[in-house]
Length: 348
Image 1 (spheres, one colour):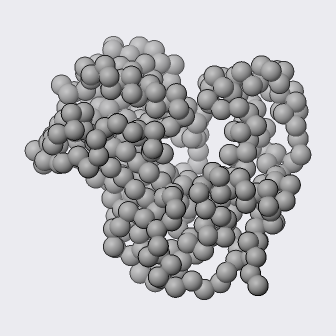
Image 2: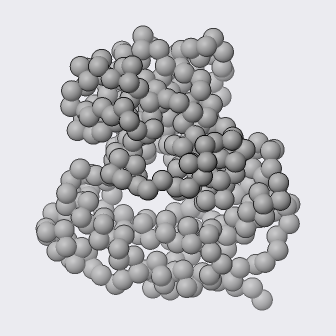
Image 3: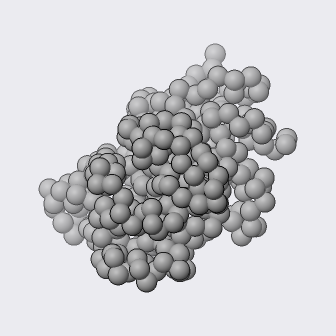
């Protein structure tokens, strides 16, 4: 009898015929009129390779939708027309919301209702990506104030004039600062690989890099600095606390010890986390542990109990409960699907 804590060995390809209860990665694209096609294509094609086995392109593990500001067809800056697949309404359903810009004439003055919608998305803790001149939309919404952002060298001067409270960088392929992600253009394949690696595992990130013939330099995850580390917070208390949490995933340290390490009180720590992360410190720490455990499930063959304890959970049952709540499936189901994908990728 196989228990939740054991990996069930061989699973045929038919396992992938049944979609998971929840895709690993859901991305909503808001396409501004005259958007730049290449970064959007690089991002979505990377998702396409990660979404299904071989080249079948079904939206199983990754899903994406096209939206426009008026729910009507628009054209890319090259003239290519595109139809929206979903009305622009339920942005909270996605793991990432992408604002795809292009010609500045279409992004300098976005509609106020769109700015309000993006502020609500950010307040809900959903990362927002500004592609190309999409950074102008995010700047107009006030989401880049006090943050670093990656912009194209041709628009840096105007961007700096319009948004003096943001720090514009022209030497980064993308920057993730507190869940506000900016990409100046290009293929956006390295940005996509980072997203896929984080949510879907290394194997599927490598699959996209391989079949899109990406630069070999992208085939290994880059060393993270303060510009590329997901969710870098400016608040020093929060940054110290998160560093302590990451270094003590398996320990039984209390939040009082976390607060002491960060040089504050538990009450002040709680307020700082709510203000910066829209989450309580205990919840944030649990998500870090779950994220670590999910990576171990995908990349190792260790049993669930060992991983649960290593990630700081009291026992496997406790871990399974929170894993299902966070990801919509049990660790065993998650692992089986990952191993199926790995074998299929290796065979192609």
